Image 1 (cartoon, rainbow, N blue to C red):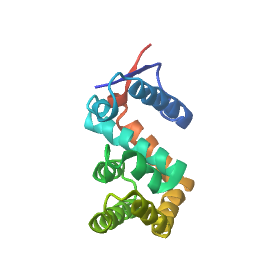
Image 2: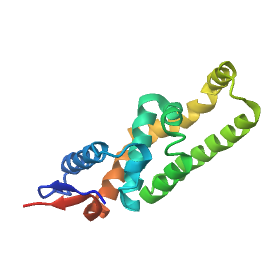
Image 3: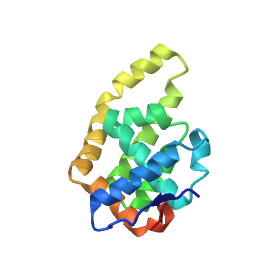
Length: 165
């Protein structure tokens, strides 16, 4: 288990919580292990937030397509669904991930390993992803995403931080 050593955190101040989480995130990213091996260093509680943060960051940078491109094989949609459930982030987002799973299982049956066919399929999926990405962006703009992360950190602080005085 990783724990970030931090001075006392004011859990009423969201900036203080974010600062402490950034310390934990950087500690996680700087570990010598790579990829999924890093996740094995974490408790389930920690994994939920770390996986969610990978998901959140990649979707904010480039939509769900970005997450799928970067983490479909290493993290996967089921792990993200589990993290959404743990954080209590909307059923609508979980439903959207299930839609993505359905379309990809359908595409796997149609598309072979031909790179040109695969690129064409991705282009055709843009319209499929637009409402899914819009829902995530709406949750983010309304503060739901960050709010759930802050709440999760408040409720599970001892899993992430070791306070030093």
